[in-house]
Amino acid sequence: MIHDHARRRGGCVGDQPVVRTTAGPVRGTDDGRVRVFRGVRYAAPPTGERRWRAPVPPQPWTEPADATRFGPVAPQAANPVINLGPGAVQDEDCLFLNVWSASSVRPLDGRPVLVWVHGGAYLLGASSQPLYDASSFVAAGDVVVVTINYRVGALGFVDLTSLSPRADSNLAIRDVLLALQWVRENIAAFGGNPDQVTLAGESAGGGLVTTLLTVPAAAGLFARAVAQSSPATSVFGSDRAGLVAEAFLRRLDCAGAGAGADGDDRFAALQRQPIAQVLAASSHTYEEIPTTYPGILAYFPQVDGELVPEHPLDAFVAGRQHRVPLLIGTNKDEASLFARMAAPIMPVAPDTLRSMFGRIAQEQPELTLPTEPRVLAAYADVRRPGRGLAVARDIGFRMPTVWLAQAHAAVAPTYLYRFDWATPMLRLLRIGATHATELPYLWGNLGAGPKDPTFKLGGLRTGRVLSARMQQRWRAFVRGGAPDADGAESWPAYDTRSRSTMVIDHRDAVVGDLDAELRTAWGPTVLAFR
Image 1 (cartoon, rainbow, N blue to C red):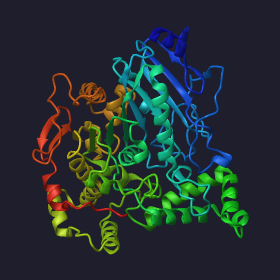
Image 2 (image 1 turned 180 degrees about the vertical axis):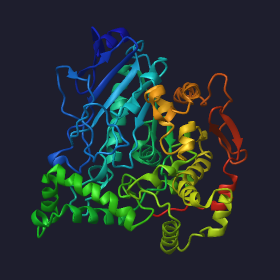
Image 3 (image 1 turned 135 degrees about the horizontal axis):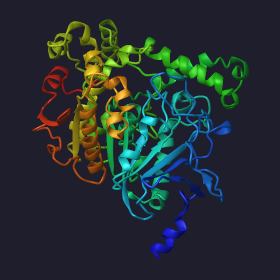
C-alpha cells in the first residue's frame, strides 16, 4: 500500500517530476543530483479584498502546475545589497514556496525537513535569492529544504485593525504559519517527515522564528528551531503599531477616498489603492520611523494580544515558549553593515543611543538600566569610533540572543554560537563578520569563487572547508541530534553553569562563558522597547 500511495503522490516524466499536493499536482525539475519544485502556491492570492487579511489556502487545481520557476516575490523597493534572482517578478500574489531535495529522495522516505524564512528587515528579500539556493545543502540526501515567501513591508506588517474588523494583524506571521501547515500536509509526498520539521531563519526571518516559538497557534508545526541574528526584542505592542499605521496612512494620503468614510469603507479604499502607491508609502514609512523613534523598526511582529499574546522575551523568561531544541547565535560584527546604510535602521551614533536608552527609562521606570560607565567598561578595548557599533550590535542582537538562550536552556536543549570568520578583504575593510555574512557558508554559495571580491585577498580554501563543516553541523541538528561535524570539536548544549558557546571561525572552538563581560555590563534584565 505504501508503494501504491507513493506512485499516486509522486511520479516523473523525464527530468520533470510530478508530485500531487492537497491543492493539485505540481511539476518540478530534476538534474540527476537535485530535485527542485519552485513557485509552489501555498495560499490564495492576498490581493484585492484579501489585502491586509489573513492568508487562506488556494483554490484546488487539476492539471500539473508549473513548478520549474520561482513564483513572484513580495513587492519591495530595489536594494543593491539584495539580489532577488534573475528574472524576479514582483507581485502582491507572492505566497509561494520551493522544495529542494536530493534526486535520490523518494516520496515517503521521511527525511527531516528544514523550513527557511528569509531575512530583509521585514521589508525586503525573497526565497528566490540565489543566496538561498539549497542544492549544496540537500545534495547529501539526508534532509529536505523548503524556502518560503511571505508578505513584507506595509503589506505584511502594518496593522489596520483599528480601521476595520476585516483587517488582520501580524500578516507575515500568519503567512509563515500557513506555509508550515502546507508542509505538515504535503511534505511526505516530497520525501520529507512532517513530524521532524526545523523552522529556521536569519535576521528578520530569525525574528519571526523566535516570535513563533511563543505563538500558541504554532504548536506542533515544528519540532526544532534555528534563529540566526534574530532581533528578538524588536517586537512591539499595539501603541507602536498604531504609530506606524498612522505614518503609513499619512504617506499614502488616502484623505480622498477614505476621508469622511466609516472604517470599513476606508479600509476598502485602501485595498483598492494601486500597489505602486502602497509600496512608495511603505518605503517612506520604513525610513521615517527609526529616524523619529531611534531603536524602533518600522515593521515588526506585534504583540496583538491574539496571535502573539505577549512579548516573546517575557514568554521565554516565564517558560511559556514551545519547548523544542534551539540553535541560536549572532555574528561577531553584526552592526558594521548597518553603519553603511542610508536609512538608520539601527542607532549607532552615541547621541542616538543615549536618546534611545533615555526613552526606554522614561517609558519603563520600573526597569533598572545599566549606567553608561558600566556598559562602556565592557568596550574598553574597542577604539572610540567603533564603540557605538559595538553597543548597537549588543543591544540589537547579541544580548537579546544571550537572554533568550539562557531562558530557553532551562526548558529545552539550546546551542549558542558566534560566527567570527571573515575573509582578509572583509577584515581590511573593517566590515568583519557582519550581519548575514554567515549565509553563503551555510548554503554553500560562496559567490563567484575566486572572482568574488570578498576573496580577493584569499580565504576561499578556508571558506569552503568552513562551509562544509557548517552545513554538516546544521544538518546534524535538523536530523535530531547535536550540531556536530566529523573531525571538529563537539558542540555542547548551553547552560547557565558552563555557558558553552561555539565560536565558528577558520577552526571552530567551544568557549566557556564567551559573553561574561557583556552579561556583567548589561545585567540580567531584558532591555527593550515594548
